[in-house]
Each structure stands twice: as C-alpha cells, then as structure tokens.
Length: 439
Image (cartoon, rainbow, N blue to C red; front, side, top):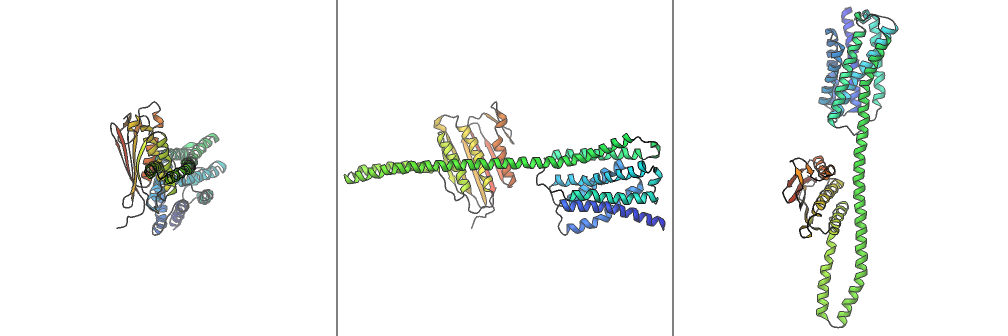
C-alpha cells in the first residue's frame, strides 16, 4: 500500500510539470475547441511518461532534452502559432524544470548536507524536496505568463540554432548535476555548482536573447514598412505638386488661348481658329501623365512614375484599372508598381532616346489584379531563374526592388513570372484582390 501511495505522489509531481507546460502554452498560443480538450486530456499522459522515465532511471542528460522534444510535438499538434515561436517556447518548460531541480539540489545536498540517499523514493527529504520543486516550477512560471507576446520573429534558421544550443546547454548542465549528486562525487567544491548554474543560466539566456532579437527584428521590419510608406507619401506630395504646376500653367495659358480664339472669331478667321483648336487638343495630351483609377494611393504612385519617366524622356504606354473595394493592401500594390517602374526606368534611361519606351498594364482579371511591366534593356544582368544579379560594380544594391516585389506577391499568395531576354525584360504578376468579377 505504501508503495502505491508513493507512486501516486510521484505521479502527481509529474502532473504538476505537465500543468506548467499547459499553462505556459495556453498563455502564449491559441488553442480552440476541440483541440483544447485534447490538450488537457494529454496532461495525465505527460505525467505518466515522465513518471515511467524516472522509474527506469533515465539520466537527466537524456530526460531533459527528450521532454523538450515531447513539448515541441505537443505544441505543434494542438496549438496555433508560427512554428518557430512554438519551438522556442517549447524549450522553456525544460529550462524551468532544470532551474527548479538545481535549486532543490542546492537546498538538500549542499545546504543540508544530505547525500544520495535523500533521493530515494519515499524518503521524507525527497517528499519535501519535491513539494518545493513543484512550488518553484509555478513560481518561475508566473512572470513568464506576464511577458507580452510579440508578432515578430527571427528567421527560422536562427531560431533553430537557438533551440539546438539551448537543448545542448540543458543536457550538459543536467549531466553535470547528476555527476555532482552521485555517491562517487564525494566532496563537491562550490565552484562546481557555480559552473553548472552558469551553464544552465546561459541556456535560459539564449531563449531570452532569442525573444529580444525577435523584437528587434520585428521593429526593423516595421521600420522598413514605415520607410516604404514615407516614400509613397513623398511621391504623393511630389505628384500633387506637379499637378498644381500643371494647373497653374494651364490657368495662365488658357487666358491667352481664349483671347486668341476670340480675336480669330471677331476677325472671321474661322479656318485659322479651327487649326488653332486642333493644336490645343494635341497639347491637352499632357494630362495623360495623370491617372485616375479611384484609388488615391495607386493614382499617386502611378502618376509619380509616369512623370518621372516623362522627365527622363521615356514614353510609357499604360493601361491602368483598379477594381473598387479590393481587399489587397493598396500600399503593397503601390510598392509593386513603384519598384517595377523604378527598375524599368533605370534600365531604359541609359538607352538611345528612340527606344526609350515602357509598357505598363494593370487590370482586373476575375478577382486577380494583373500587373505587367515590359521594357527594353541592354541585357547587362544575370538571372539564374530565381534572382536577378546586376553585372554593375554596385550589384549589391540592384535587384533589391525585384526581391521586394517577390515578397509582396508571396505574402498575398499571388503569382510572379520574370521573363528576361537579351534585349528586353518583362515581369508578369497576378495578385488576388478578394473581389470576384461579376458574371
């Protein structure tokens, strides 16, 4: 009977560990019904697994990383969040348990001078120690529950490195602890405990550092987005200024036009007046540099690039039509247009004036926004099928615009086709707009 009670007590301690894992994951990840029921139902199984591993006498150096792997699977299957974030937080419970174990060992081995016999099941020292260990688990958990989650995350390979290093640190520190509390250890120097604790704290620091770097990386991405928006706003201001100049010039010129037409009419020179009006209709073509799609952001971006091309002596044959009320972020669409047009203008501006021409098309195709940009070029680039590399000395700054476009298209689960040829370069893009074309 005593053995059954001892085993039940040991299992409850293991259940406490499982509850710590669940509470941590529940605070950091999303878990909706019915997965939530499975997540709770798995706790006794977690406790049984740990209990059996303890009975087998599995070394801590193996048990700690093994539990971390089980936690990762638990998070991946039953909770919702990005994979890398779930993997990082899945290692945290093992760090909690290791730190609690470490404190427990210091109290009952170093301070009270109890030896290995205190670790025998049913020993009063072990029973009290396990209660302290469980209390420590929840005490360490409480501040972690208050840490605000961040949307940003490091690239996957960096997070993988953090996880691997943390697991190695946990395993090595647990191995050192097992050596310290073994009967063969004899008298242990305080420095040995300090080294073990430093190693464990370094493992925990890696996880904290990962979260900190994630926030920095997130802020970096936010800064990039803000810079992109500022660029769009600057282009919009420039475009509005150019529009004002056009209007002011036309206002000045229209007075002279009216005076000329009136003079020709008064003198009965109707044929001359007809020819003059025909010339005026040709001058009105300048307003084609401004587009009006009903989307202010897109209008500003396209008009700004048309004006830039015009100042560079480049003709742009354009067809622009944006569906009303599209769900796609207008800023992303503007970024696509601006980057593609910047690349095209840069490529065409070095060509002879007679071939400076860009074809720009943006139309709605049944719920998909088709963006096509084609331009002649010298062909001084290398394209390996996945990325564009300029042959210029400053190649590190070229091709960035196309990379940005590819990221935006991937973000919206769209399609991009890059068609580089010897004397021309064409990019075809399809981006879902969330608006199906009426039939």
